[in-house]
Length: 407
Image 1 (cartoon, one colour):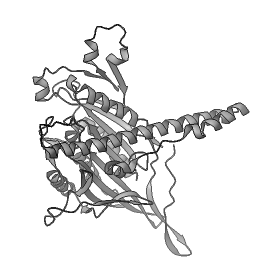
Image 2: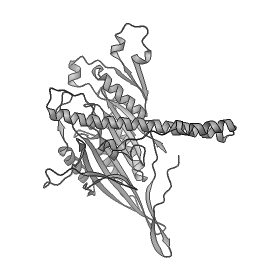
Image 3: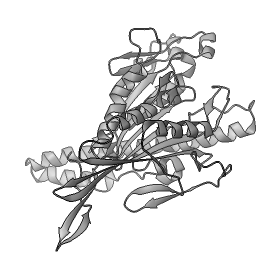
Image 4: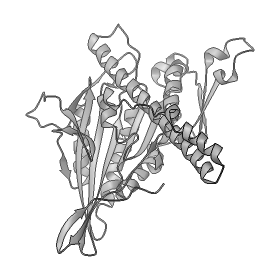
């Protein structure tokens, strides 16, 4: 089993935030993030709880990118070395991997995931690293790429051909073994980094963006860039195949509705917020179930050491009706349905939460950090996706019974 790893990145102040005074309420120290509530600070009330003045959170990685010229600045390369390299290592071992960026509109999700021509993000760097050591000795590799977006709760293929200007929305299905998938989504075989980047740039160009009251180039859809990585080799003269699916997800940002913008922007924002709220509910429910599981494990370990019949009856009562697992509403949103394996399933998952340091974004920043804290408690059950062959009376047959990763 493996917990979801969570990273937090603080972006620089925007031009709009600098015009409004640019008061910074976020600070970082090693793996700890602190956020100060300026409204509570201004209140002359001795009875205000200190926890309302200063919120503290602990994560696996913290990146201070507020000042590009400062000594604490975390570059795109540093983030790749921490997160991207671990994605590549897990994929080479045969595990499914998901890395997704979460945060409010304009907090730097797309910059972190996709980057710019002068500063590559995690997605192109992961593609580059994948092709750098593509074919180890004695192995042959195959890489297929797909790119989709979820816009107004409908799935669109971002790598559609030129003769399909307005393709029909694709349907999400669920396979009993491999989980949710998109029916009719195009898969593109690539043989080098350049071909992968061409597909990435094509998908980004087709993605829906628009100006909002918060961000001039806001992403109006959730985008999932998927890499199917398959390694084939021979073991004792018999073929063996290890496959991994890498999901790199750039979520649309949450935002407040503004009636001064056109109705289309309000509808888009409502659908974005709905899917993100569902994602938050799923994260909270999974975290609660994981905590229940870990507490039951600790109780069982105590009883196994011989605590007597009273402890045994106590543990049985706790594991009964009073500790029922929460229902996980994956199908309430297309986004959570597609991320079902990445959250609580067969995947090693990393979440990078991007936040604004401005006092004007206190509510959104605090909400993002709370959800990130819940996500850190989620336990996934990744296993190696391997197909071995074995001989039965001279006939070679597949064997897919691969044990789970040891906890």
